[in-house]
Structures are given as C-alpha cells and as structure tokens.
Image 1 (cartoon, one colour):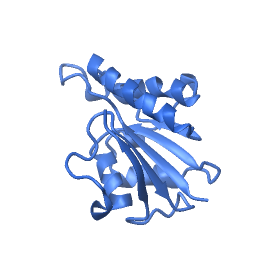
Image 2 (cartoon, rainbow, N blue to C red):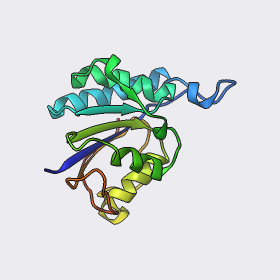
Image 3 (cartoon, rainbow, N blue to C red):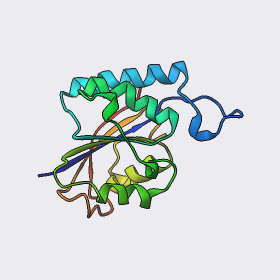
Amino acid sequence: MSRELWLLRHGEAEQFTTKADVDRNLTHHGEHEVRHIAKTLHKTGLRPDALITSPAARAYQAARLVAPTLGWDETALAADSRLYFQGLVAVKTLLAELPPSLGRVLLVGHNPDFENLLLELVGFDNLRFRGDLMPTATWVRIELPDDWQHLAAECGTLLAREVP
C-alpha cells in the first residue's frame, strides 16, 4: 500500500511587527487563500488519516479552516513543533514516527521546510513546474512508498499541486 503526504503551506500572514513570529496571524487575504484551497481539498473526495499542524498561529488557523471540509473537527488537530522552522531532518523524523496505519497525512506548515521536503521527496527534475514551488496556501499531494520510516531522496511522485 502506498502512502500519501499532503503539504499545505499557510496563507498570507501579517507582516512582522512587535509580535513574535510564532504569533503572526493570517491576513484576510490569507484566510481567503486557504478557503480556496479547502474547496479544492474537498473536491478530491479524499480524507487524510491525520492532520498535523505547526503550532504557529498562522498555520494553526489554516488547519482550522481546512479541517471541516475534510471531515475533521478542529479540536482533533495535532500541533507539532517540528513543523515550525526545525528543518528537513525534523520533518522527516516526524514522518518516520507516524504509525503504519496512517495511509494519508496532511501537514500544515512553512517554507523553507516544505519546499525542501518537496524537493527531497520528488526531486527538482521530476517537478512538472518551475518558479516559486510553494507560495502561500499552496497544497501538494505526494505519493510515497509503503513505509513512512524509509523516505529516500526522490522516492515520491507528485500527484497534484494547487496554488490559489
């Protein structure tokens, strides 16, 4: 059985102010971007087995906006600090710790970690597009081998990409 990894980058966030980065919220435009992507996710007819978000306000807000369209109660969201600018190794460690029973997982988080993960799993030469890989509120769907623990470079296939 193959696995699917869905990555959703948060929508446009407030500019840096006196707030800590982790506390920056989505802008109205960012909320609109995420709602657009939520409709796309709903149209797939698929539902992730797990929805894990960065603890940053903007990512958590994005997860809360998409959760109902995927049949998830927002109280069931799991936040994991490894999705908040901890790097590629931390994100791959999170994936390696997923139970084998999970076939499809949605992660909500940030660049550069998500762009780096996309490049690592799919490979630059295998992408069917060029330019900005994951602008705000971009969703990608990647097919992976059967084992979350052994995700080698370029082991994945990009099945879908949606940019608002």
